Length: 179
Image (cartoon, rainbow, N blue to C red; front, side, top):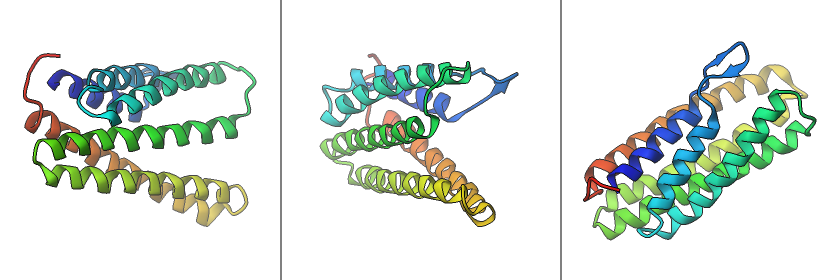
């Protein structure tokens, strides 16, 4: 279990970090989502939320491949694809943190379950607000762009808190050090 939470942690970190050299993503999201999918699959016996999160991470792996093709010039309607990806990402985080809630509750750690509950609500709310603000930014550049930047900063801070929560769960609830 310890190893699986490590895979999820590093996978999410790879997804959130974007380093580009000459328009090539040095840390491709495909690798991050693969790690999340494998980690969640390994925890699927612990909580049902992890099984669903694993399935959604596999879908996001496919979306990351499509995104890479888009960057190479394939013709796909970008906005619709991005909204579907964001929705799938929110669902994955919802179920991933739901799995953390189930595990924490089973291990008598209501504090961690409550943090996971608050984190998943905040994540979905911030992503929805950022998406709506992005839509508004097309018409009203100044205010909407400023709000979009604030939402992105908020999402990054929340993501850091989620990674910290996963780190704590890994070290405080994972009873074995193997797979």
